[in-house]
Image (cartoon, rainbow, N blue to C red; front, top):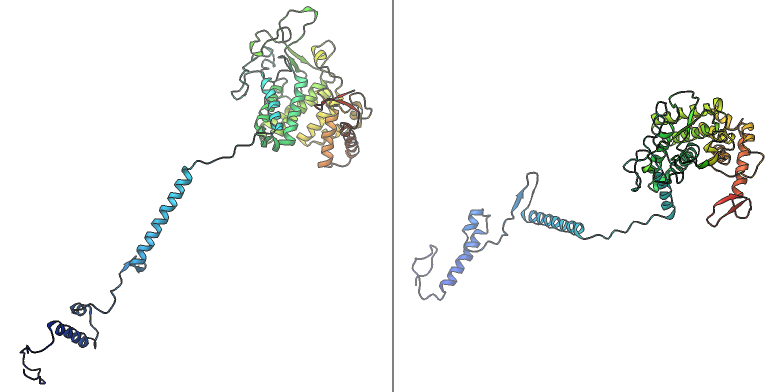
Length: 435
């Protein structure tokens, strides 16, 4: 074997060398790396190395245009969003499809039921062509031809029948509409909470529209008005068909119904004026209709004060038998109070608080009917109405003295209703009646 010299010796391989081919190959690789480690290599040169590179692989990135992010982070982010969306959709699907257990609506209380049934009575008593929403299935159109042909009262369809017959007595009917309007004015929120406000207003309008037919409501002055439609006289054995001789359904009435008019009816005119005035407050959001009602009320009240003094229930009339009026002074106070509320005209308040009217109405002398509020005696209601005026508006002089008197009297009457007093008889159901 030749010895090595600086030149590296010959290319001849000495077979006596003990190193194996594998060892020599490994040594060459070590030499290669040692020779190359002294300077940096580019990517191509790194790929020429026979062994694995000692450096880490280059990371891959995703260019999103405005930012460059790691591909691994990008994939994890997109995956997380997709999984979150799927979970959210699954939750929504479950919520939408799983049956819900709704709590049953609480049944209405007894007062709400009683109010509904009380209003239903008016639906059952309606006369004329009924609306589709009348809510009384066994009632239909009736007496649609009421009126006096050839006169201004040719169309008197509408209004309400009285009690169990089919007569329309305008005096007690007006009182009923006044009270219904008063209840809505004072307790509209309660009516609405009970779901009956629209119902009550529709009933009031049904009555008011009929009242406007019973006199010339477009005129400023009148000389006559309708007091009654229908008849119930069965005296002297009369066999003439009427509402008491023939007890049948209003829908089956086919006979002629008389129309009774009067030119002397301070009580009726003032009560109907009160009904229209109160209704005008109920419908104050309908300006045109409210003003129409106010104008009619003014016409009626003026008629009762100037040209119509007297009682509508003249002796010998049917009204004197069924709904006899004993005075018109209480209607003056009652009607004037409502006219003031509807118009704000102080002349009506002056009249309502006039001591002479109060005296004639029985405010200072008592009597068996003192404190009894009814279709015939409105004094107690008028005093409450005017006491309300003093408490809420306090108009002062010159009304204060009589208003304070009315308030004191109202307090006494209200206290007399208490069981510890014996002013009234009362039933277990708290129905009061005078001794």
